[in-house]
Image (tube, rainbow, N blue to C red; front, side, top):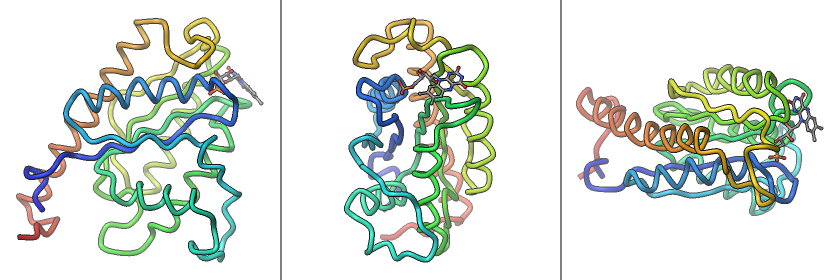
Length: 205
Ligand SMILES: Cc1cc2nc3c(=O)[nH]c(=O)nc-3n(C[C@H](O)[C@H](O)[C@H](O)COP(=O)(O)O)c2cc1C
C-alpha cells in the first residue's frame, strides 16, 4: 500500500530501568508530537519490555515476547525515535542492548533501518554526556543504514528539567522535542515519496 493511503508509523524506543525515567518522559513528548503531526505511534518502554541481553546465534523465537515485539515494531516503522540516558559519558547499556536486537532485521531487501528516519534523544545529569550519547547513536544508526534526522535533542541537567514522573517541564527542551517529533514524520513522508517515485520501494496494488 502506498504511504499516501496509510498513516506513517513512528516507533519510540527508550527509557531506562529507573521508575520515572526522564529519557522515557522525553521520548513520550517527542512521540506525542509525531502523533499530532499525523503519524500512528507506538511507545516501546525498555523497562516494560524487560529484554534479556542479546546473544549471538540465539533464535528470535527462543527469546520472550518483549524481544519479538521490539523486532516487529522496528521492522514496521517508517521512523524511529530513540531516547537514552547518558551513562558514564555515553549511551546507557540498556539502549545499546535493545539496538543490538536489530541484528534480527539483517535480511531482506531493506535490512536493518534501511529507508527509515531516526530521531535521537538523550537525557543526562550534567552538560556533556548527553551530546556524547546522541553522537554515539549517530554511529549506530549509520551502521544500521538509517537516516539520522538533522536535529538531536540532549536534555542536559535533566534533574532540573523533568518531574518525578520523567515528564519534561522545561518548555525550551519540550519545544525541541516537539520539533523533533514533527521532523521525523515530515522526513519519513519525504523519504517514502522519493522511494516510491524512484521505484526503490515496490508499491503493492
Ligand atoms: C550509572 C549512571 C551513570 C551516569 N553517568 C552519567 C554521566 O557520565 N554523565 C552525566 O551527565 N550523567 C550521568 N548520569 C546521570 C543520568 O544521565 C541522568 O540521571 C539521566 O537523566 C537518567 O536518565 P533516566 O531518568 O531515564 O534514568 C548517570 C546515571 C547513572 C545511573
